[in-house]
Structure formats: C-alpha cells, structure tokens
Amino acid sequence: MPVETVGLTQIIIVVIFLGLLLAALAFVKRHRTPITERLHGHKRVQIINDISLGTSEKLKIIRIDDRDYVVISAKGQASQLFALPATASVTGTFHAEEAVA
Image (cartoon, rainbow, N blue to C red; front, side, top):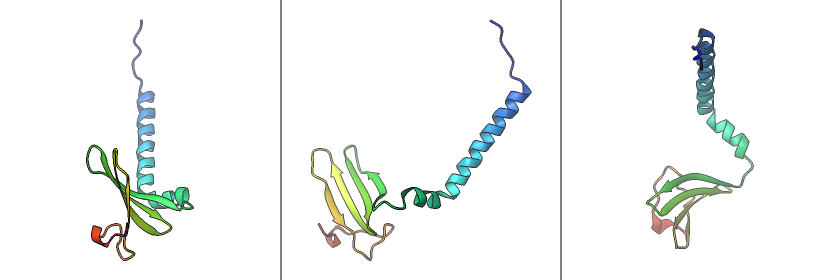
C-alpha cells in the first residue's frame, strides 16, 4: 500500500479552513447578545443561569416576563421556586428571607 505525502496545497487549504473557523468563533463570541436575541427574543421563559451545587442539586435563575425567579431542585425532592425582589438583579445579592415562596 503506497503512502501519499501531504502536499503544500493541502496544508494551505487546512490552514485557510482553520483560520475561517477561528474567525467565525470570534464573530459569534463578539456578537453573542444580538444573535441570542434574534433566536430567543420572542420566548417568555428564559434560563439566565444554571449552576450545579452538588451531584444531585441544581440552582437555576429563570426569567419569565421580565421577572426573575430562583429554582432549587434535587433528586427525589420537590423543586422550590422563589421570586427575586424586583429591585434585585441577576448579578446582585439574593437573600432567601426576601424571597416569596
């Protein structure tokens, strides 16, 4: 079975292809918000953040009609839903005693 060598043309094509992939990645990262708004702009429910607290516990911040909620779920237990105060932002602090069950 003869072994073919890699030609200069093939190397140039691969380098150009990888360069185009990196350019597309940079474009998507730079324009992530407008692209996401076009794809998900009409949805009433959005998952803002999803964090794993352990092997079976998860915390999610969701937005429904411009209102933020915290959902805490665990295996074998009912999920808990807390409404974030209107003055709190997703990046702000959250106190459970301020939440509405």
